[in-house]
Length: 345
Length: 182
Image (cartoon, rainbow over all chains, first blue to last red):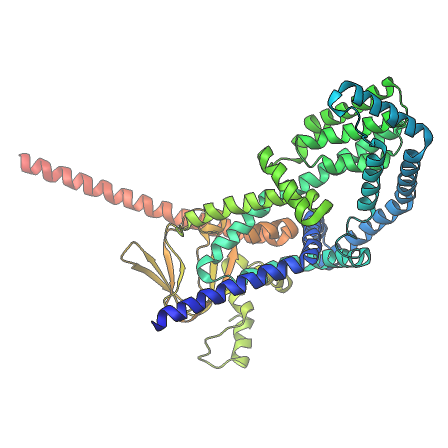
């Protein structure tokens, strides 16, 4: 009798502890996002630090050097891009308020109503919807992190965390591994190494690929004199991480922008051609070189990962959803394989 | 007498079990060529593990990824189901170094014979070291290959002797057979 009572008590305690942990995790969700972003950044930067170490620098000086270089890049980004960006977003909003745009939307609405009889008599209010969408985009672009934690904290905390994760990450990993019981120790070490090989290639590849596509898109759109080329380029680069849908959405946004800014059919053709060429370059040149190790995810997995990421963490969640799904997949597969090899299951 | 022994005489009583990590590392052939500073770098990637008496360090046929150095304590190396004792290792000895290069299955089991503290040196860390500090990595790799080449040489010699012995025995057997026939 007593044993059943104590067992029941144990179960209750374990469940209570689990609930407490889950509650705690969801309560500090925004902080976890910050930590995950910092860890991802530190992980992507790790080979640079190792390379500098190989060149004879200590880990600390290597980290400081990387931060100085990154600081330079970020500063010049702010210096050159932010004025252009804010100008773009401001003019985007103004452009949608304008009279000519109003007319354009009326035309489109009329066209849609004519072709789809079901919608006749309904007020689609396309312009207002579009404006709302743009407003949301402007907000989320500038306040991607503001939604979660005040921008101030993120701007301070993320570089701070990245710095120390980059500098002391290996020691931290060693200390964590030292907590693993003897029985599972060698397996854990091996597992971490294998995951590192797979994920490192995958995440760094995604990062480099997105950057190259973003830069190419910005350049192409700039040459074609498409308005808001910086915004669209950044979007195309980020969206490129999402297989199948991503590459299209960048092109679609660019084409719509050309249409709304009264571009001719020729211009649309050029933009479409530019994106086609960028995709070709990506598929033929960049991806085979950069994405050596792909973490084959099923399209359905990707779509659901993005939806779930969006539900939990908004914009940021959608962006990190695909890499996170990749991480979970590799971890699960490698953990299962190791456990089998070590006769644990 | 090396100077370590001289220092050891000053700082240690005769039957001290625990040794300085450096003196332990210095005696491992793999780390022989390393200077003080380089040993510090190696120390940073070693994992110190503690084992209770009779605790299993690794099992035969499980995948292995590295070698262990006995900081202090005693370790049984055994094979087979009935745990046939191959050798008893103690302070400053090392085992499992083959797994550093060939990450295959362990060919024997290792069991702590008493309270034991080990220093683990593993393949992923060796790879990292070779990447970030190739000088140290090369020195270690060279010693490792030397050790394995030496073992191969011994193995070849033993093989040759055994073959010669086999030939002798075979010819003896044949003369015996002939003798029976006649």
